[in-house]
Length: 61
Image: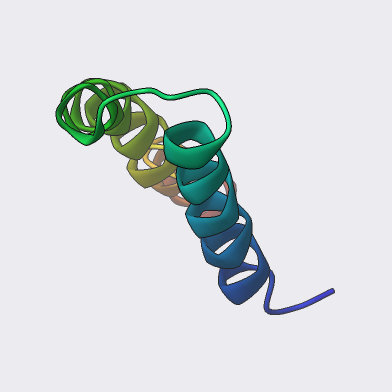
């Protein structure tokens, strides 16, 4: 599966709607904790290939 981002976004939207309607979680809390969790998750995904450039420089020598 090459493009899985649309499916992940759709799953997140469905989870948010069900959290508000079924589990009666206030939308303010959902936004706050969503932003709180988004920061470390985005850092992990953005830094995934951060150290791969060092390996390429060693292999070229």
